Image (cartoon, rainbow, N blue to C red; front, side, top):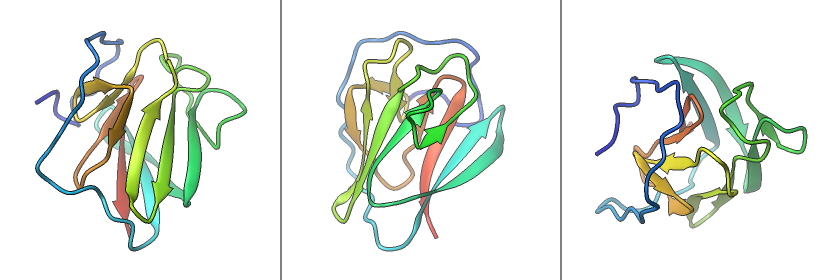
Length: 126
C-alpha cells in the first residue's frame, strides 16, 4: 500500500486521485499534537500543531515552511479539531499523498503518514 515511510523519494510521482478508506478510526485529538518531518529516513523537524488550520509549503504565508524545491508555495493544509485531523491538498503540482495514495482531501488515521515533495509527515500525540 505505497512506499515505506523510510524510503524517501526524490522525485514527484503522479497518480490518479483516490479516496483512501481504512478500517481504523480517525485520529482522535486528546493531547497536544506534533508534526514530525522525515527526510532521507531521518526525523529532521518536530513542530507543534494547534487546533484550527495549519498551512504547509515553501511560501511565507505558511505557518509551517519547509525548504524543499519539490513543494508548492502552499502545498497542503492540516485541519485539527476535536473530531480528528484532515489534510487537504491545495492544487499543488506534485500532489499530497496520504498513506501512499494521492488525495485532494483525506482523514488521518492512527499511524497515517503524508508525503509532500521529498518529505514524509506524521502527526503524533504527546
